[in-house]
Length: 271
Ligand code: ACO
Image (cartoon, rainbow, N blue to C red; front, side):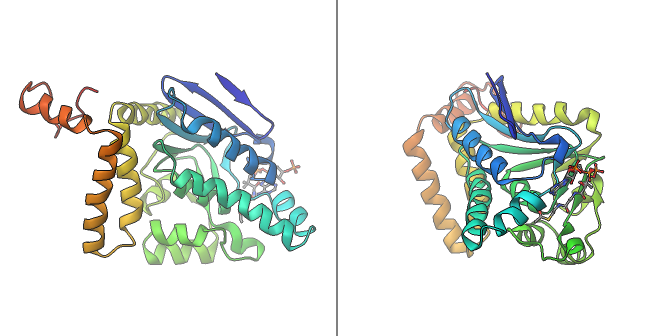
């Protein structure tokens, strides 16, 4: 099944939802229309039984060139504060939705990734990019600070000195540097990017989906907790997960201890 609106495209194949920014002529800049279409697409895909992993990529030469300077900034500001706040709610809204998405998510950064693009980049659980991609906090180049969460993303993902340099200089960095600085998990040639992302998605599809949702939320949550709070949260999160699926872990133990059909240190049990 496929969908193709003016600004967002997606299709589903073999358990993977391939969701794409789809304004290649505008380097996939995020307009209010695109932001609304992304929220609709996330709604549509989140609980579908044939979707186990969501991959976010871009059509053409860009992942996303960030916020649309004309449609997101100039045109909404012309409507006054009401227009600005609405545009912010719509963009931040789908990034937040993506951060806490039910299914595992992967950013597949095929090209340009600027400014506001760091919101969905951080929202995805994992990120893989092309060596040919270019990342930048370009806000300083047109006279603003990196807002919309972009500064927070830089500080969360990068060492302090890298984040400060990146934000203050506004110089684009290539995929390998983005990987060295912590923005993505891996950088590889564009020609091999989709195959690598597909392999990672397939590995995720083989794992227990309830445990994956509990795990990805836990990784995001515990960073803000002291040790004892984290310890307590993780006990409760596992016990809550058990109310969704209390057979998976027992089966995982059984296949290892009794059946001896796999080794958890080396791979996932057979669902
Ligand atoms: N907002 C609005 N329009 C954009 C944006 C954007 N962020 N990015 C590209 N476009 C438009 C261009 O205006 C151009 O439109 P036109 O064909 O009607 O003239 C079209 O997309 C193609 O852009 P080019 O600049 O011609 O493409 P090129 O491949 O040469 O360069 C690049 C790509 C480097 C991404 C360049 O377009 C660029 O610098 N874009 C802005 C990046 C940026 O700073 N984004 C804002 C970050 S800050 C924030 O998000 C809050």
